[in-house]
Image 1 (cartoon, each protein chain N blue to C red):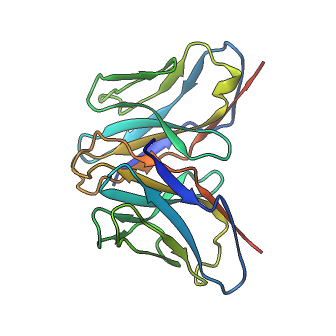
Image 2: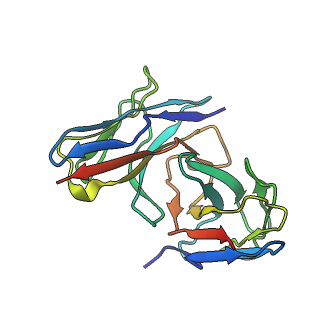
Amino acid sequence: DGGITQSPKYLFRKEGQNVTLSCEQNLNHDAMYWYRQDPGQGLRLIYYSQIVNDFQKGDIAEGYSVSREKKESFPLTVTSAQKNPTAFYLCASQTDTSYSNQPQHFGDGTRLSIL
Amino acid sequence: GDSVTQMEGPVTLSEEAFLTINCTYTATGYPSLFWYVQYPGEGLQLLLKATKADDKGSNKGFEATYRKETTSFHLEKGSVQVSDSAVYFCAVKDRGSTLGRLYFGRGTQLTVWP
């Protein structure tokens, strides 16, 4: 079945450590997105990518970095500069950004906590 | 810019009760509208969508009608079940945007008691 796989499901970060969250999709989608979810705040956009080797900052990009070397993969690194990383992180993809009526498909998320 | 205002929760109902979750939006163009559902510990699943004025999206007994005149997309279900307990998100995507990004409401927690 086609879908989006996020790993790991749970992740713990030590002080001063960078951690990378994996997101892989086999839907052949061009666009991919990373969101952060905090209780009562809905979803906030961190980074997005419309095509391979291209990505843009979202609303809360500080302390995060991404890469898009392959169409299927869009990993997110939470750097030590992100002082409050504890949250639920969701990856999403979409067929093509030019079609506004197409929904985004989501993975099952990674819950990141500080040790 | 685009934004979504969603009814604050939590909403607590008895089984078979009628559900309404209000959602209003602002958008610069002619947006597409979506409702997503999130079950505990999971990602978001698309529940229904509507892409033009007066369209009605429906799925699993849930309905929402795209009301351009009131910029609303309220979610309704005639008879809720315990299994409907989840968080519901309203989202808007501006058709004029080439970025394809979604703007989400803050989510509404629904709890249904037997």
